[in-house]
Length: 232
Length: 171
Image (tube, rainbow over all chains, first blue to last red; front, top):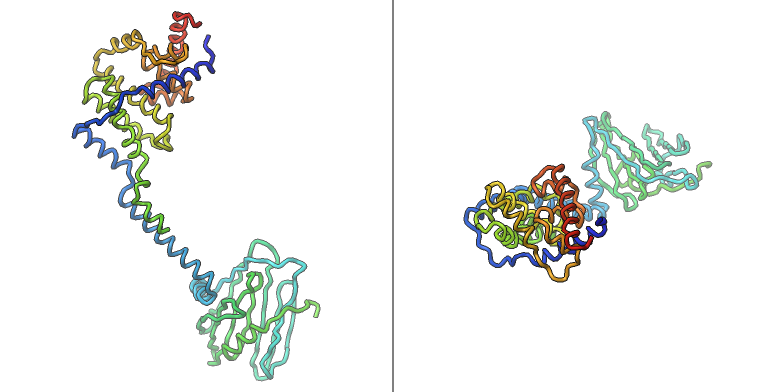
């Protein structure tokens, strides 16, 4: 009785001897008929020119995306411009902001404007755990507003801002080095106001300053935003 | 990415099938011709083996290993034997001849030496099954027979081997 182990060892040994003693290949000459048949078979096994073109196109596209990504990461101005391309999501001019980071419970705070243009007085201020509002008025129906929303849990949030009822123009600006959206809004009365929307570097808090009377004023207010004690 | 674009047309991108073809066609031809003694029949055997390889390319991950070489050589041997059989030429003689004329490979162990005396198909069945662990279904496709026939063939090969071993006084 031959065991499987003995059979395996013998089979491997014999196969090795057979492979070593195969007839020498030499320079074989194949007939034109064989060459033709093999050429057809090889064509089937080879990726077509069309596949190669697709691979090349994909490689070029990936290169563009990679280089574009590096440019976007390294230039806040370009990133702000790029972001603007994707915010408009439907006919109602709704803009989507995605909060991807989050603030831990112990780091929760409130925010407030620390610079206000002259002539404004505080009308309203509130802070409710993860969002807050401040409203200033100048006594001439001119209102300056500040809102913020804090993302408190993992998983991200989408916040939509709609400008369906007014004429506006979207521009890009920079707030404390971060790309921001500047909406130049023409009210029904013909008055022009400036709204700035931006996120902090961690993308965990969304801020909005609205009602400013110039771009410079809007950016100055935005850059003055500071953390404050929620109890104040 | 730019490097990738270049490699699409580089020699390394040459298909596995082309590599197998270029690496083995001459050796396959020599093996098939050794069995068939007819150039055109041998070309048919080589072509049929490559058709099988092209249809089963997913089973190959490389071209140059001992296992791949052994597999391909057995494949072409089986195709060559099929051609002999289908043309009703010397089939019985072939089996008898190969059984009667033991191939000598110096240095083989007694058991491997007895195995070398088996007819080609029996020998190949045992090697595919026991040296490389191919399933009966895989052996069947290589040898162009059903799975059940492959099972029967390897069982008979084992019986035959034991018979030879007994004659040689090993068992």
